[in-house]
Length: 428
Image (cartoon, rainbow, N blue to C red):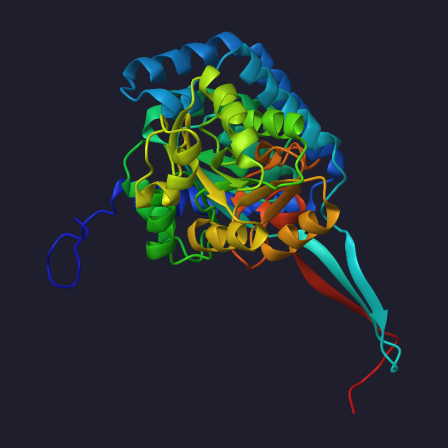
């Protein structure tokens, strides 16, 4: 019997730590293989994975129905968890679109020559092993797998407990794609259980995981940032604002605000606060509110908005700091760009802001004044999405200030190295 030096049996590693060690070693080997793999093989894996998702539609939707049956949540959370044929088709199309993107690896990012004749190139390379911790949306696993595979990174996934059956069914399709391309299936792995210990193991995975990307609610992101011993690419709250300037075209403002709030209220790019200029609010705010109310939206309004529409519920101070992720909109009347920017600076999450304006100078002043990852002019905040940026998909919206900001696609999942070419130079 194996014993420790003090005569006591050595305690076995907990299952989560054991999984991290074993799966992490396999992921590291897979990452090396992916980094050297030809583009054609990575694209084959993506296309075969997309085909497998379509073929396995019945099995994946059945797994998702089982997840939904076991889930007690309602509203936006349940909507994020739900899959249907259209969403599954979009997931498969996302993999195909990633395959159609240029190869992010091997790009020469910069090159120059020194007076001594040495030639320098900065070349895009994979990061290595990515740890992806996400919550309810099953498509996140497929997007993360596709983006990491194409960018030459292995990925270790830990999805939310409420969507584990769906995640496993999707994982099986991704593995089919990897086998079809002759690439190691360990390039994409998923934690085998819903136990939160797997999150903790990944957060302590220094030397195994090179980068952690959390995608979920505020509490998840805060835990990752607090506990991680691995670099983190954070996805913060989507406390997004749409500001209707006095010069806004009324019809455009009504259309854009309705879409920004109600297209999918539960996504991080949904507008959570409407700011509207006092000069245009008396005539336009009632129309915007009527449009949104007809779509099932509720409101939390400041005193100036309630002076125009007394029936609106009063906003509590905390409401302007709330990411609703639901058909609820905070509403505030402001006196121009300066007040709008001050409100966003105080209450925003550096995610996405939009201005509706016909005045170019006003729009440019607003866009220059925000400190958010994405700013839009005359467009819905729901365009803050990797697919809409032409990235094929996204692994999250980065709101930090280091490495990447905004939708994280293929290029954002690469690092770089230097290659130096000489002709016999020696250093004096």
